[in-house]
Length: 294
Image (cartoon, rainbow, N blue to C red):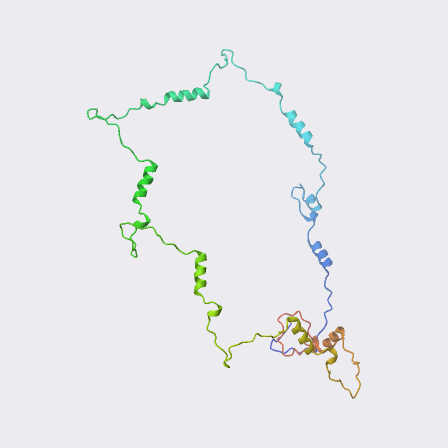
């Protein structure tokens, strides 16, 4: 244990851990020993405490099968002739019912007789002195209502358009003869000038004649051949000579392999005892290996 937390901890080096941790199988065995087995539990159904501490006993009972249980129940159930029926008193008699219950049709007819008909209701009569009159109204049919609504709906020419030019007196069907698509094309063609109707500008030399070009431009294949001729071939380059005054030497170096580089880097990395922990804060736990002087 630490006596003074302010005292600096100076350790000359570390110590390898010599403990031997348990394997997974050893941990399973240790936990199994700590867990109680089936015989470790106390069975309070046993009578004596000695029996509860020593263990139980395997049952030697012979339970009945399903067939035996059915036979036992059948033997306990009385048969038809084993019942003691209640006798009827001799001073009374029994009679078979001769009732004639009504069928569904009879019940409908009975309910119909109980329901009053149209002429059996008592209506409130009007004063006979004034007299009654059969209505002679002629209500509109569906077609009459359609015609009536159509007459009340305004027509297209009945709306008041502020930009209108037609008077209320009536309109007039158009007598215009618009041009067809072919006539419109012919009209546009007639309005456009032809090739000889343009005013061309003559050359500054004053010559009125021109010459048709006799140039022979290169095709795509001709341009490919032309570009290929301008590009030098493999033997036409002049490479720069490498050390012409002396010979060339192959490298005899022996580079490190991946394993050698790993060993080299491991040698450069400091080990656990190479760190200076003199300025480190002492740990709070006492489970570390310390020098005997502390």
